[in-house]
Image (cartoon, rainbow, N blue to C red; front, top):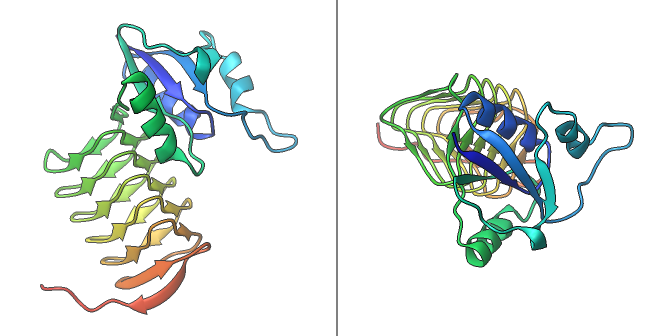
Length: 216
């Protein structure tokens, strides 16, 4: 059993804790790179962590030092994720682990990069390439030949169609459908379904143009 240390705090921490416990890891520490942002009237993630049967330590990043038998995950899901990962790597010499919940199906023909976290009941089909620091939340389906690039976040019950591309740092909100061959531009925030074969960009994402059909 490894001890999991999570860098940064946000809603994604709940998914990481679930995944870690299901894999037999112990959630050891949460390293705070900045104060947690909470919504009025809502329980904070730090409060939720303290309510666990075996709560992890919450420590500021300046007090962190690597310990034996630790693995590391990224719980910070706001902008600046890449900067935090670079800081952790350069300052402490640690790398972000890949975590796949045991209820997921990941095809042996798929490729998962560093820092990918895949939440419960997700499906990653054949010939899918998922880049570094990608998050796929519960119930998502990623169809063959899709490409998920660094730092993108796929919300719960999202369907990413055959051959679609989700650009670096893009966010797809829950229960959206990304059509086959669609291209989500880097940094886009998808708030509604995206039809097949179009390029969308912006916040919120809007259709910019129809893509030329690829080879059969």
